[in-house]
Length: 163
Image (cartoon, rainbow, N blue to C red; front, side, top):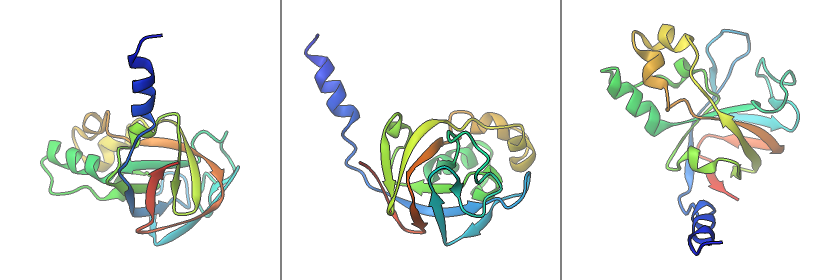
């Protein structure tokens, strides 16, 4: 074992930044845009209460998250001032923390514990929702999927941190 391995493991587990929930949305129907809400109940096994996916998933994609900073980057690539989070079809927008740094780790939002389960790749609806080039602009900026480890409630302004 090289000297660098423990250092890299330590760096991967060290995320001193604390993010913040900027936007929450639930989709009540398939293909519908998410409806913005101020808070949402998040449950083990079923995901977000009121979301059309609630209870129908394998557990790998119970919650989708995207970074506000990535929305700003996508807007810039598309020559827009901003991107309405509803158009990305994600559940939660956070700022101030690198979601990809949470890969294979558990993190807390408010009193809910989530675990990253994968990358949330863009679908062809991004072209439709964001305009020409929307799909390509979202590549690498689509956020993450997560499964619920511990139920609770997520509210606007809640902190987001590595456990």
